[in-house]
Image 1: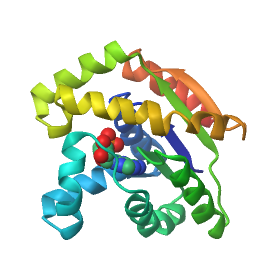
Image 2: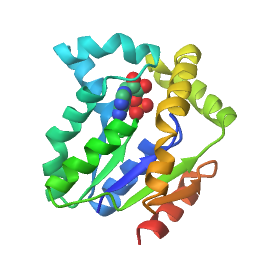
Image 3: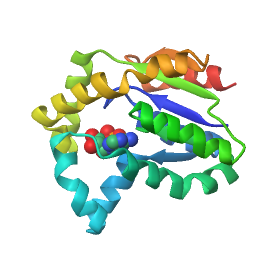
Length: 186
Ligand code: AMP
């Protein structure tokens, strides 16, 4: 099974993905985590992306598509992927469909975690205080939110038209959201 966890930054996608990894043995594919690892390792890719990421901008489609492609087969062989923070543009969504089709697979569910902007701001300022992630500073976060609204939200009709989209209220406790996700996945 392949699942996309969809929603704005700090909606809880990573938290829910990690739980599904534990409970279902699926593989979390987070392009944000991959990019942070590249930065931490000091690789050329990391150097290239560091500035854009810390300012809250989107990394080029071909870069993130290649990151997913490199891990996709392994995830499929392991029982399926949870895409977290990918796709973020229509071009990425189309590339993902093509990559999966080549493996004889498809997206089975897209779950949108709905959280209002005020709650996102509160979550992210708490996370910034606790973890100091550079792109959680208020200015970068505004840029990330704007990128979500401009580039990523248009994916909702893309998946809605395919009948794959379920919306879940992500304002509630982690466990309540998890229960609703489990009900969708069966
Ligand atoms: P995330 O951890 O998913 O919030 O991602 C953190 C940052 O990594 C984003 O603000 C972007 O700069 C970059 N990034 C992660 N995934 C993508 C993606 N699919 N497309 C473009 N940029 C991405």
